[in-house]
Length: 222
Length: 319
Image (cartoon, rainbow over all chains, first blue to last red; front, side, top):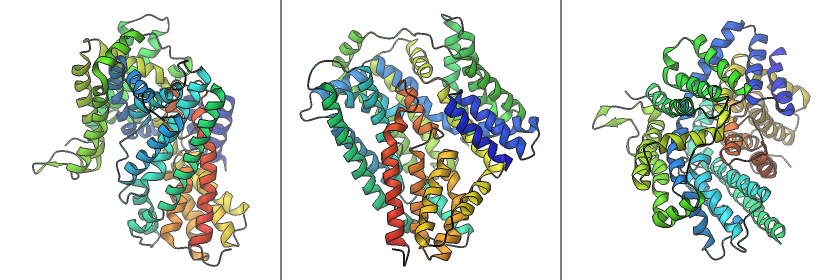
């Protein structure tokens, strides 16, 4: 039972706004100590697991390139491009990106996107530019933050509910492996097909919410 | 053979450059905390696999201490708004090319060298082809961007530091959470949670079993921050014994909908830092939960959709 104390620490720590890195460290210690591991052993467990997950740091390599392009006006250009586009709205720009992200992920191309590589330098400035089109006044801070948060969310929804349609993606392989351990053999294609209804629902639901975002933005600007 | 160790060394060059930049441009009083934090991160990525586990753990704890004490981003000289507008007008859509070069090389590498063999030589670890291609794509893109924008020699490191400072400690949070997930697994946290769910809900109709499986996946993903960690535990605890064996659900769709319910949970949790907290930092938003707030309704609606599909189309005899 005490091993669950780690979960309690996470929930309480995040709710109280304690520094997330500290919360996670304390939770790891609490659960591991409760499971009977010694303190020095726990330090080693954290170190090993942290190093084993170092592949998560590879996408940051894009930062130098993105920074240089921003320095040379990439965001200004992306914004300007959309401002010249007739009929462009924030919602429509983001629906377009949602469709692109879902379709490419369904073909296994999950690398085509990402918050640092794609949303910050290109998608968010385009969505902001679309909102600035109607009048030339700059956006206020809250509106800009709302648009950026929506741009980030579209990237997530698109990849989550696109990638499972692809038969060789990690989640399908995991499903196969877990079922196989329990003596059930499934064809990857059979699993992937059942991801399609939810993928369509995700596009319709989130697309509709983006159109509502447009309405909200129009009201704010009026 | 190029594998995870080599990729770690390349990935470590970025925080190493940021640490050196902080140490060379000491404009704020707390500069040593930022320099130390990024130097330790670089050391962990570059030398981690060759250090003893406890040494790696001490590095992590020191990083946590420095981050808790507060990292101080200092302003980096970059271009002015006018200079950017002028440069954007001059370079136009060519500016997209280096950015698109990263996914293009990643995808090309993954598709063209699937087994890691180049001209018959086993050069790349077949399990790491995508990561190697991603690192290669980032390197090619950087060279391309330097040439295209005719950046001064100091600019790449300065710009990398500007963005790294903006994202800050959130850059290491995904790795910390992955470590926590590993420790939760070793401490059998999952077994306790699955036992809790099944003891609270009487799973005596197909409908209740479907609801328990999907919501269990979403909830446990919210706690672990990762649907992959939740899937084996909740499927073994609820999916297999109840939804599949007792009520005759077809395993493939049951598992697919369970996984997708987990993804709904991913949309709603700060524990999925990669997806929900890192973009807040990368887009310089003030509200830590801004992205989750936007995703909440979509996550809940799609969870209901998954439950409906499972009950109506997959389970025989359920109303």
